[in-house]
Length: 251
Image 1 (cartoon, rainbow, N blue to C red):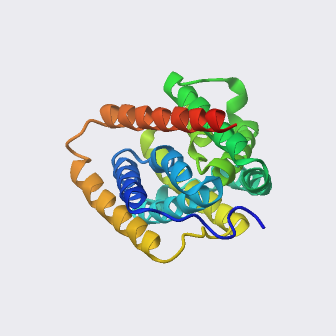
Image 2 (cartoon, rainbow, N blue to C red):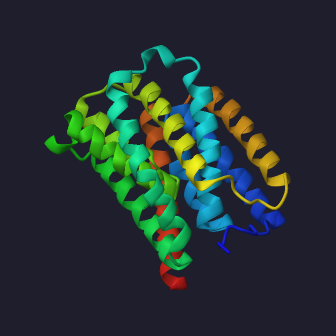
Protein backbone atom coordinates (compact mmCIF):
# COMPACT_ATOMS: atom_id res chain seq x y z
CA UNK A 1 0.00 0.00 0.00
CA UNK A 2 1.39 3.44 -0.92
CA UNK A 3 1.76 6.04 1.75
CA UNK A 4 -1.07 8.01 0.10
CA UNK A 5 -3.57 5.20 0.40
CA UNK A 6 -5.04 6.22 3.75
CA UNK A 7 -4.16 9.89 3.70
CA UNK A 8 -2.93 11.84 6.71
CA UNK A 9 -5.07 13.26 9.49
CA UNK A 10 -5.09 17.05 9.38
CA UNK A 11 -5.37 18.61 12.85
CA UNK A 12 -7.12 21.87 13.58
CA UNK A 13 -3.84 23.77 13.78
CA UNK A 14 -2.65 22.23 10.52
CA UNK A 15 -5.93 23.25 8.88
CA UNK A 16 -5.33 26.86 9.91
CA UNK A 17 -1.79 26.74 8.52
CA UNK A 18 -3.10 25.18 5.30
CA UNK A 19 -5.72 27.92 4.99
CA UNK A 20 -3.07 30.58 5.49
CA UNK A 21 -0.67 29.03 2.98
CA UNK A 22 -3.28 28.72 0.23
CA UNK A 23 -4.60 32.23 0.93
CA UNK A 24 -1.11 33.73 0.74
CA UNK A 25 -0.27 31.73 -2.36
CA UNK A 26 -3.44 32.86 -4.14
CA UNK A 27 -2.84 36.45 -3.06
CA UNK A 28 0.68 36.64 -4.51
CA UNK A 29 -0.44 34.79 -7.66
CA UNK A 30 -3.00 37.50 -8.36
CA UNK A 31 -0.53 40.27 -7.58
CA UNK A 32 2.38 39.03 -9.68
CA UNK A 33 1.04 36.39 -12.08
CA UNK A 34 3.19 33.74 -10.41
CA UNK A 35 4.05 32.34 -7.02
CA UNK A 36 1.15 30.20 -5.77
CA UNK A 37 3.05 26.93 -5.95
CA UNK A 38 6.33 28.46 -4.81
CA UNK A 39 4.70 29.81 -1.66
CA UNK A 40 2.09 27.14 -0.88
CA UNK A 41 3.56 23.84 -2.10
CA UNK A 42 6.38 23.52 0.47
CA UNK A 43 3.90 24.18 3.29
CA UNK A 44 1.37 21.69 1.91
CA UNK A 45 4.10 19.06 1.60
CA UNK A 46 5.15 19.61 5.21
CA UNK A 47 1.52 19.35 6.41
CA UNK A 48 0.21 16.51 4.25
CA UNK A 49 3.32 14.63 3.16
CA UNK A 50 4.90 14.61 -0.33
CA UNK A 51 2.15 12.68 -2.10
CA UNK A 52 -0.97 14.46 -0.89
CA UNK A 53 0.75 17.84 -0.48
CA UNK A 54 1.91 17.88 -4.10
CA UNK A 55 -1.44 16.56 -5.35
CA UNK A 56 -3.38 19.29 -3.53
CA UNK A 57 -0.94 21.94 -4.78
CA UNK A 58 -1.48 20.68 -8.35
CA UNK A 59 -5.28 20.87 -7.98
CA UNK A 60 -5.39 24.37 -6.51
CA UNK A 61 -2.70 25.73 -8.84
CA UNK A 62 -4.60 24.44 -11.86
CA UNK A 63 -7.79 26.16 -10.73
CA UNK A 64 -6.13 29.51 -10.03
CA UNK A 65 -4.36 29.43 -13.42
CA UNK A 66 -7.67 28.67 -15.14
CA UNK A 67 -9.42 31.58 -13.42
CA UNK A 68 -6.49 33.90 -14.10
CA UNK A 69 -6.38 33.02 -17.80
CA UNK A 70 -10.04 33.91 -18.36
CA UNK A 71 -9.17 37.52 -19.14
CA UNK A 72 -5.96 36.96 -21.06
CA UNK A 73 -6.37 33.81 -23.16
CA UNK A 74 -6.10 35.79 -26.41
CA UNK A 75 -2.45 36.56 -25.59
CA UNK A 76 -1.44 32.89 -25.34
CA UNK A 77 1.27 32.05 -27.88
CA UNK A 78 0.19 28.54 -28.80
CA UNK A 79 3.16 27.98 -31.10
CA UNK A 80 5.59 28.69 -28.27
CA UNK A 81 3.56 26.60 -25.84
CA UNK A 82 3.55 23.37 -27.87
CA UNK A 83 7.16 22.29 -27.10
CA UNK A 84 6.74 23.30 -23.46
CA UNK A 85 3.60 21.25 -22.83
CA UNK A 86 4.69 18.26 -24.94
CA UNK A 87 7.98 18.03 -23.05
CA UNK A 88 6.18 18.34 -19.71
CA UNK A 89 3.85 15.48 -20.60
CA UNK A 90 6.88 13.25 -21.12
CA UNK A 91 8.41 13.91 -17.69
CA UNK A 92 5.32 14.09 -15.44
CA UNK A 93 5.23 10.27 -14.98
CA UNK A 94 8.84 10.30 -13.75
CA UNK A 95 8.01 13.00 -11.22
CA UNK A 96 5.01 11.04 -9.96
CA UNK A 97 7.12 7.91 -9.56
CA UNK A 98 9.81 9.75 -7.60
CA UNK A 99 7.29 11.34 -5.21
CA UNK A 100 5.45 8.07 -4.66
CA UNK A 101 8.22 5.50 -4.35
CA UNK A 102 11.29 6.99 -2.71
CA UNK A 103 11.55 7.20 1.12
CA UNK A 104 9.72 10.25 2.48
CA UNK A 105 12.79 11.92 4.07
CA UNK A 106 14.63 11.64 0.76
CA UNK A 107 11.64 13.05 -1.13
CA UNK A 108 11.33 15.97 1.32
CA UNK A 109 15.03 16.77 1.00
CA UNK A 110 14.84 16.52 -2.77
CA UNK A 111 11.75 18.73 -3.00
CA UNK A 112 13.32 21.31 -0.72
CA UNK A 113 16.49 21.29 -2.79
CA UNK A 114 14.54 21.69 -6.06
CA UNK A 115 12.48 24.60 -4.74
CA UNK A 116 15.51 26.33 -3.23
CA UNK A 117 17.60 25.96 -6.38
CA UNK A 118 14.73 27.10 -8.62
CA UNK A 119 14.12 30.21 -6.52
CA UNK A 120 17.81 31.12 -6.48
CA UNK A 121 18.05 30.76 -10.27
CA UNK A 122 15.05 33.05 -10.75
CA UNK A 123 16.40 35.56 -8.20
CA UNK A 124 19.76 35.65 -9.97
CA UNK A 125 18.08 36.09 -13.35
CA UNK A 126 20.09 33.26 -14.86
CA UNK A 127 20.62 33.70 -18.60
CA UNK A 128 22.07 31.12 -20.98
CA UNK A 129 21.83 30.62 -24.75
CA UNK A 130 20.73 27.02 -24.15
CA UNK A 131 17.55 28.31 -22.48
CA UNK A 132 16.35 30.08 -25.64
CA UNK A 133 14.68 28.76 -28.80
CA UNK A 134 12.95 25.42 -29.26
CA UNK A 135 15.67 23.57 -27.36
CA UNK A 136 15.22 25.87 -24.39
CA UNK A 137 11.46 25.39 -24.51
CA UNK A 138 11.85 21.60 -24.52
CA UNK A 139 14.33 21.76 -21.62
CA UNK A 140 12.12 24.11 -19.60
CA UNK A 141 8.99 22.08 -20.30
CA UNK A 142 10.66 18.81 -19.32
CA UNK A 143 12.09 20.27 -16.11
CA UNK A 144 8.78 21.94 -15.28
CA UNK A 145 6.78 18.75 -15.80
CA UNK A 146 9.07 16.71 -13.56
CA UNK A 147 9.19 19.39 -10.86
CA UNK A 148 5.43 19.98 -10.96
CA UNK A 149 4.58 16.30 -10.54
CA UNK A 150 7.22 15.62 -7.88
CA UNK A 151 7.34 18.92 -5.97
CA UNK A 152 4.23 20.84 -7.04
CA UNK A 153 6.46 23.62 -8.43
CA UNK A 154 6.65 23.69 -12.23
CA UNK A 155 6.85 27.42 -12.90
CA UNK A 156 10.51 28.41 -12.37
CA UNK A 157 11.88 26.64 -15.48
CA UNK A 158 9.24 28.39 -17.59
CA UNK A 159 10.15 31.72 -15.95
CA UNK A 160 13.80 31.18 -16.88
CA UNK A 161 12.84 30.25 -20.45
CA UNK A 162 10.66 33.37 -20.80
CA UNK A 163 13.44 35.54 -19.39
CA UNK A 164 15.95 34.18 -21.91
CA UNK A 165 13.42 34.42 -24.75
CA UNK A 166 12.91 38.11 -24.01
CA UNK A 167 9.21 37.92 -23.10
CA UNK A 168 7.63 40.93 -21.43
CA UNK A 169 5.58 40.52 -18.24
CA UNK A 170 2.43 41.05 -20.32
CA UNK A 171 3.44 38.14 -22.57
CA UNK A 172 4.67 35.92 -19.75
CA UNK A 173 1.64 35.93 -17.44
CA UNK A 174 -1.06 34.45 -19.74
CA UNK A 175 1.37 31.95 -21.25
CA UNK A 176 2.58 30.84 -17.83
CA UNK A 177 -1.05 30.42 -16.75
CA UNK A 178 -1.80 28.36 -19.85
CA UNK A 179 1.22 26.17 -19.13
CA UNK A 180 0.11 25.89 -15.50
CA UNK A 181 -3.33 24.63 -16.50
CA UNK A 182 -1.95 21.98 -18.84
CA UNK A 183 0.89 20.72 -16.65
CA UNK A 184 -1.37 20.53 -13.59
CA UNK A 185 -3.99 18.58 -15.54
CA UNK A 186 -1.23 16.16 -16.58
CA UNK A 187 0.02 15.95 -12.98
CA UNK A 188 -3.41 15.33 -11.44
CA UNK A 189 -4.22 12.73 -14.10
CA UNK A 190 -0.99 10.88 -13.31
CA UNK A 191 -0.87 11.49 -9.56
CA UNK A 192 -4.56 11.24 -8.70
CA UNK A 193 -6.51 13.36 -6.23
CA UNK A 194 -5.13 13.81 -2.70
CA UNK A 195 -6.52 11.64 0.12
CA UNK A 196 -7.56 14.31 2.60
CA UNK A 197 -9.75 12.29 4.95
CA UNK A 198 -13.03 14.05 4.13
CA UNK A 199 -14.33 17.17 2.45
CA UNK A 200 -13.37 19.69 5.14
CA UNK A 201 -9.87 20.28 3.77
CA UNK A 202 -11.26 20.72 0.27
CA UNK A 203 -13.67 23.36 1.55
CA UNK A 204 -10.85 25.09 3.42
CA UNK A 205 -8.66 25.12 0.32
CA UNK A 206 -11.50 26.49 -1.80
CA UNK A 207 -12.34 29.20 0.72
CA UNK A 208 -8.67 30.14 1.06
CA UNK A 209 -8.35 30.36 -2.71
CA UNK A 210 -11.34 32.71 -2.87
CA UNK A 211 -10.11 34.91 -0.01
CA UNK A 212 -6.59 35.12 -1.42
CA UNK A 213 -7.89 36.01 -4.88
CA UNK A 214 -10.07 38.83 -3.52
CA UNK A 215 -7.21 40.23 -1.43
CA UNK A 216 -4.78 39.90 -4.32
CA UNK A 217 -7.04 41.84 -6.66
CA UNK A 218 -7.50 44.56 -4.05
CA UNK A 219 -3.75 44.91 -3.43
CA UNK A 220 -2.57 44.67 -7.03
CA UNK A 221 -2.63 48.44 -7.60
CA UNK A 222 -1.30 49.28 -4.14
CA UNK A 223 1.83 47.14 -3.88
CA UNK A 224 4.66 47.67 -6.41
CA UNK A 225 5.26 44.60 -8.56
CA UNK A 226 8.98 44.48 -7.67
CA UNK A 227 8.21 44.41 -3.94
CA UNK A 228 5.53 41.76 -4.39
CA UNK A 229 7.89 39.61 -6.47
CA UNK A 230 10.59 39.93 -3.81
CA UNK A 231 8.07 38.79 -1.18
CA UNK A 232 7.10 35.77 -3.29
CA UNK A 233 10.69 34.65 -3.77
CA UNK A 234 11.60 35.24 -0.11
CA UNK A 235 8.66 33.17 1.12
CA UNK A 236 9.40 30.45 -1.41
CA UNK A 237 13.05 30.32 -0.41
CA UNK A 238 12.07 30.01 3.25
CA UNK A 239 9.68 27.16 2.45
CA UNK A 240 12.22 25.36 0.30
CA UNK A 241 14.96 25.55 2.93
CA UNK A 242 12.55 24.45 5.68
CA UNK A 243 11.47 21.41 3.65
CA UNK A 244 15.08 20.54 2.87
CA UNK A 245 16.09 20.74 6.54
CA UNK A 246 13.11 18.62 7.65
CA UNK A 247 14.04 15.95 5.12
CA UNK A 248 17.67 15.92 6.20
CA UNK A 249 16.77 15.73 9.90
CA UNK A 250 14.33 12.87 9.28
CA UNK A 251 16.84 10.84 7.26
